[in-house]
Image (cartoon, rainbow over all chains, first blue to last red; front, top):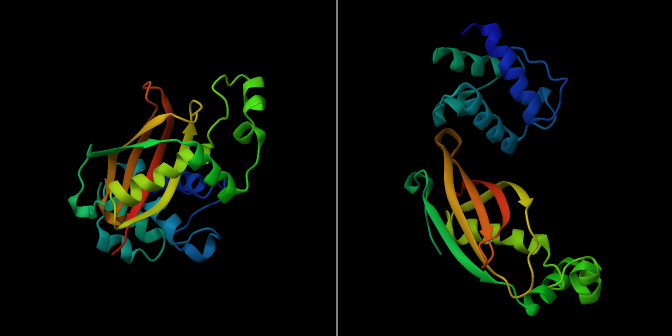
Length: 79
Length: 139
């Protein structure tokens, strides 16, 4: 899967989770950039990403996500 | 009270319990919520609007059984309710005996979340509530 395709699908996931169609992600996007991105929404986000890409992160990995770029890397690492 | 931890749960695992709606529970909920809408407190009003069996039980009283399911049965002691999506499918009346059933539909290990399908049926086996309950776990 190409990085652009991951971004396209991930953007959609973020827009749905945060109910905000104007979200545009980049590698450097963090929780500071999205107003409603709190600990509960983070869980919702991880679950929505796992469902969208049909994969499972491990707990340690999720704790180490510093920004969206890390998430995209983790998705791509699974092919 | 059950004491399931995340690691002890499995897909399709199920728990259920029964609950009878009484006059007293309705009165307590009226007091607790401050909702004096006539559909819930006035027999004739409810009947006038097509509810032959009288006052309609508060949807939120029925919904509170989702809290009971999570906090007491599935998973029980270590439950942390994070999200509930609920549909009210049919009215509940005083005297109804409800069966609340929770079934584990998804387990997200990375964030320790269990997704539970909740169905509440009355004693005539009519489904009155369908909900999705997302719970986390106290560490």
